[in-house]
Image (cartoon, rainbow, N blue to C red; front, side, top):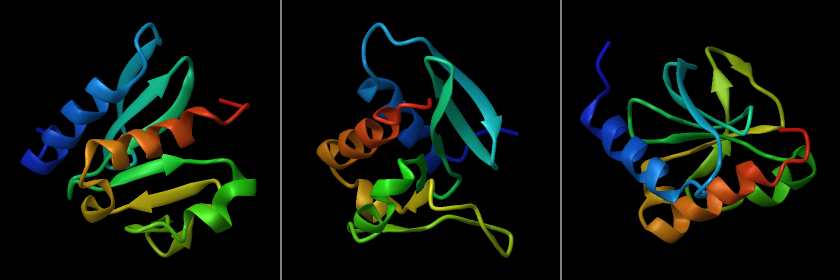
Length: 110
């Protein structure tokens, strides 16, 4: 299935924001285009232009308070405190996107 225009735009922005030299693999999962960085899932670009972000559970309570961030739910089930959804509004600037990518990459258990 082809990417939506919002998803393709976000995927291009994610590619540009990932660190140089990182081993990056793109995989279709979670209904989006996921980015595996150095062997661990970091983020996934959703069909609506939002981003599924893997975060440190200890930082969840602080991060869920950021603009555009909310609990990640799949179907009717919460994914866990290690996952957040960030809507397109919360990713408006390149600095916003860079913040979320950095958060996803700081996890020691990637």
